Image 1 (tube, rainbow, N blue to C red):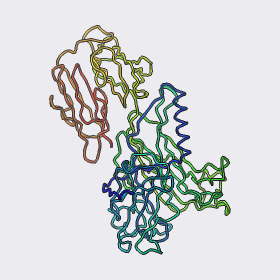
Image 2 (spheres, helix red, strand yellow):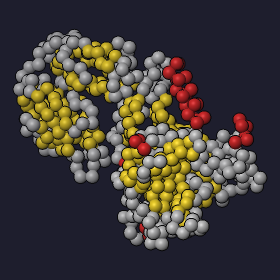
Image 3 (cartoon, rainbow, N blue to C red):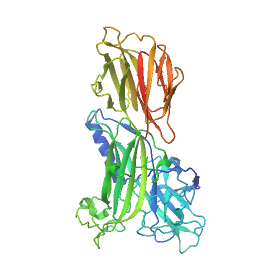
Length: 512
């Protein structure tokens, strides 16, 4: 067995927990979707991450925490969240029979001095688990952990470590495992043309049955979700960061879903409460989908023989009075994602339309459309009467027709200039002289230029010679981030190079 590898980053993590059968079903589902639609829209997951707050409900002092991940190689582990009393984790490969994976273990060197006390039942814990909350941390009875890895796992188990009564100084995993929602994310291509791809999240019941004819322990789960126009960093996924982590009632996606593993002997006749599946339709501006999964103890009636939850509403679709117990865990997860789209913008003093050969872009009115990555799309610009097409920006150049090979968001700009008299048609046209570039900003922030004297804020328009290349730089104010450009500039990079021709404009948007 390899030696344990210390990992000392303070980055939190995402967890995935599909069963082998679930993986097979996902593969069938994706294959079926692709077969139904030769124009299936696509997207790419670039990293999934998360952090979880969890109470110590073992009834005794805990000496650490262990996350066991099946099917994960040590080379795929990026880091662990180490801003807690146990510090960096050790990562150790293991093999049990035919199953192999990694154990990520946070452990106290002296549990009498460094421990997580038992959480008092019936008391809240949200936000008290963080080391920087010095007034509550020592006696909160909860902690914050995370593992960041770039791999698919067939199972994941999280347990507190407690002192082994038979071997002083040795810590062992406590059973049953902790009830923490560990989602798996995958992309389900859209079946209909012009429909955005969907990112699906799947959560398996965290506590398996203890016997073949018994259900696992039941929990209530709530899910909150939001999409952001930027990638999310691991250390942003904290309960005390509501600007990133969705917790507001307006962001509630699933309210009080009961999740409980069916017994193995139930076959197809089980209640099928063992899995949660949701989905988010991706927009061209989405760069991350953030979810918060909250788990609460089920305190309603259970069958004394099978341990099946017998909810007051029969179907366990509504949490009735007396059925919701203590808050157990909150897993903050995010998946950084890039959909494959064409995004056309128009600018300049004139007007016109941009159309794709397949008619899915008719801009006009429809300027954004999803595609499968690698698809080649022919675009044509047509100026309206009294205007001239002055040229492409972004993924296209020149004044002729353009073919774009889709990869991520392929941003294309079309510049139309007003004619001094008559004119119209497609392509060509004079660029004129004394060209102007105008900048707008939203939600404060500034945009400056390398030439022309733009400092917007205050000076937002520059007049320069036609053909001048102006580089614009967007700078967000303290506490905010840059959301992206629109107009002649597109994308989310903070700089944009513009070849000024006629009168052009752009807008820089900043997150509130």
